[in-house]
Image 1 (cartoon, rainbow, N blue to C red):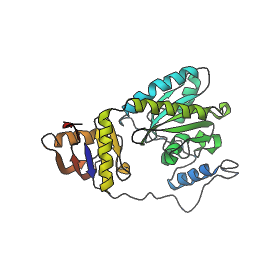
Image 2: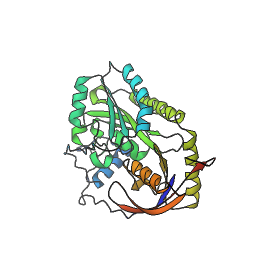
Image 3: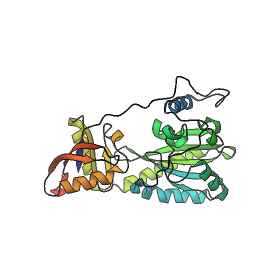
Image 4: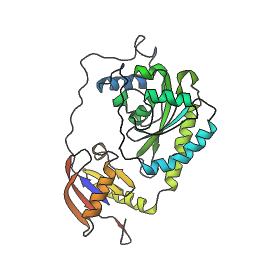
Length: 297
């Protein structure tokens, strides 16, 4: 089914006062890489406090099951290979919320729990400042943050590299895989391992892509070519959205969209009406059945 929605107006995020808090010889890495300096700037603008150790916990958010199913066997194999090494493998969703973490080192696990690098906690750059998971999503590519390159002071003994995992059919980022450790134990092979792991997960996602999902994607592309509105194409466990719709949605919205479209299209091929999203915002949406050989997808 394809759902078109009107956009809603957003609000600007106010930064702190006119002061800056960028990497220097006294408050950050001695020589800041350009991508780290930019991330520190964004962290300041987002109002992240360097001395704070607060983290955002999201206990009830919907888990991206398709991504998790594709990633779990790959992560399990890597964890077995790394069981004698003091590293952790971290999986996060497309909002930078940690959805899984694997390490065979109890002391490392306890330490990461204290840092709140654990399941359910957000590592979004706007929430905790410069970190590999959050920055990989912001930059849409591999990212390494080493020790004092972290914006938050409590993370500055942690090193991590992270790589986004893209849906091979839609190109949408489904999540992030990261490998992290204490800075003293960091290894140059961590990034190549994370990149290889991401590629293997993407391969499994491709293998698991069904014919119906490809039909949905074709319908989505046709709709976006002729419309500048927010567009979503989805089934029970598949969703792709354009750049207009992306900022309006959270993972919790997929089951809401699917339930609404299924009910509204039960007796017709197209419907327009109001829809309440997970953040309690009401939008006007038009949904249309997508068919293949006269069968509803």
